[in-house]
Amino acid sequence: MGSGRLISVRAPTLNGNFALVGYFVAEEDTKRAVEIIRHKIARRAEEIVPVCRVSEELLNSLRVPPGGIMRVPRSDRPEGKY
Image (cartoon, rainbow, N blue to C red; front, side, top):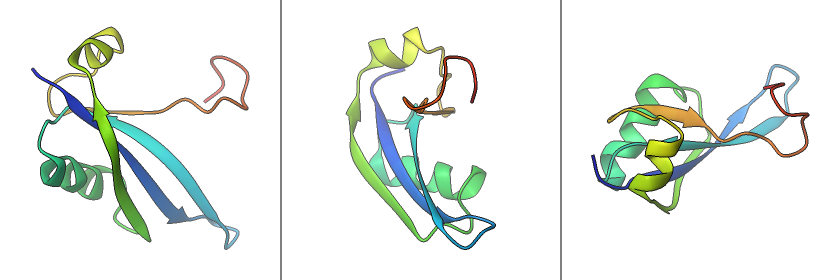
């Protein structure tokens, strides 16, 4: 599969504020990773930013399939409450 990308998405919420969410994307090419996010998740996003590369080992351990995405868990929520 290869490495992937961590992508940050800033999008408007229903109450008029903004939410900042991270996604692991199992795609080596940065431009394609951004397009996967734009197509599947963030059509209304204000900002989509590639943050860094993530290892194939991380993607495998999280069971993110090639071309797939996974939301980065928030650390301020109890485990399993996403």
